[in-house]
Amino acid sequence: PSSEGDGGAERSYFARQDEVAAGTEGLELRLAATLALVGRVLDDQGDPLEVFIVTAKPMTAQGTVVGSPNTISSSFEDEEGRFSLAGLFAGAWRIEATSEGHHMAEEGVAITLPRAEEPLEIRLLRCASIAGTVFDPLGNPVPVASVGPARARSDQPEFIVRSEDGESVPTDTEGRFVLGDLAPGSFALQASATDWAASESQTIELTPGQLVVGVVLTLKNGGRIIGDAFDEAGDPLAG
Image 1: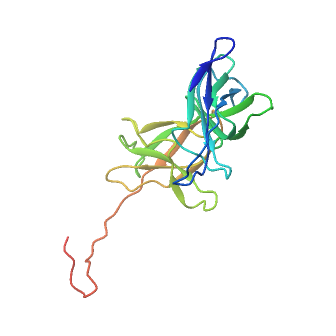
Image 2 (image 1 turned 90 degrees about the horizontal axis):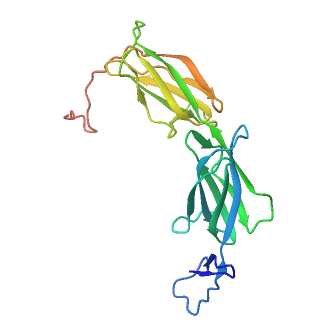
Image 3 (image 1 turned 60 degrees about the horizontal axis):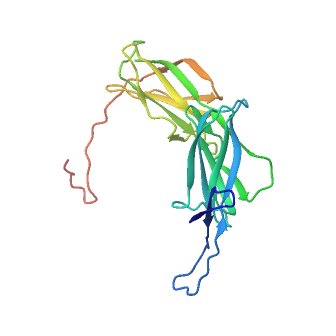
């Protein structure tokens, strides 16, 4: 609910009670004026981002993020990267920001409202890109090959997990590819194509705003395995 304050401006109020057991009776909720979070969104070089979205997700006392409908999100456009996100209530929040061509280095910034600190500063990393060419084993460029990044797990570097930061892209008629909008970090890049076995993966360290060029991925000769399959009784399996 909302009402007009002394100056005629509309004010919002909010009431919340966590961990209410089913069947509770006589519960009282006291309305309190909502709060606003002010801050700035900058890139990794300290330059302000002019167009961005700030999202606030409430958290429990244990640090667990509470989902909708309490999530508050708003878009902003400001030359100095400034924002004022209204409609928040006292308690713990996780603050996230998104902007085209940028990634957050962490999952979000944990804060507690009300806060007496300086305006919140959120840093986003500039995206990186990778460009290169895919060849077959004879050195010929391969058109319509598929190239995609995979992030290497730090605890098991040899184990590659498919990354959500970017989908695979096809090569052009000259076997060339460009992968953009990649989060800085360690990536293992691999190519695949019909009639060929996938290339060896190449691990590339990406820094904010970096463009890596001249990457070469070479497909391998494939092969077939022919045999028979039997069940536990020794009878051949159909199919």
